[in-house]
Length: 155
Image (cartoon, rainbow, N blue to C red):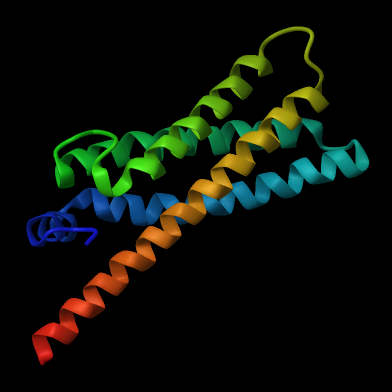
């Protein structure tokens, strides 16, 4: 079971659930646009500035959703990170955050070219994509739990 009845009630009443529901697809959209710009740079060598900037925007959104997600997790489960139902999602999220942070650091260090920076971004994006799949599977599990509870009520 993903949520106890009390956790489900807190989740359904939390404003942070709505915030996450808005930020997650927004971040994924920015990720897709940025990924296209990064791939375009590797294919053509053009639009480097926009590719680099798009990763900064994506990184900002990741940090924002991580911050608001920690507040959500505290409100629902009583801890900011590593609540049992979301332990592995949080682990992978922190790896994604670390890689995105590394991108920001490298962005301002001399000695790294655009290609180096965008390779780091692609590695960060791969981890982010795995994390997005984790959360989609968790969302599906929560939906299945709700459907099962509705069936039990109607029997």
